[in-house]
Image (cartoon, rainbow, N blue to C red):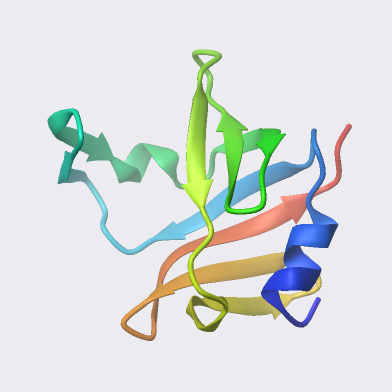
Length: 105
């Protein structure tokens, strides 16, 4: 993989993404359309989630509770390919989240 386009082609329904890094450890307050919530990122590092939905602008990862958690694609310059099976989403040029790709079972 060399680009966001290559990454999108690589990901299919059932492919497993393992979060290997998140810049914010612990409880992170997030403001959104539904108000304020707290995301526990420490718990997410090391989790493996299958891709359940693929769209051109996002993918959904199935949570342990059976719900879909959406990962929206940033601009291509905000994606770093870290190897044949790894990528990072960047914020201000630094990794925000990193993932390892595992094939679908």
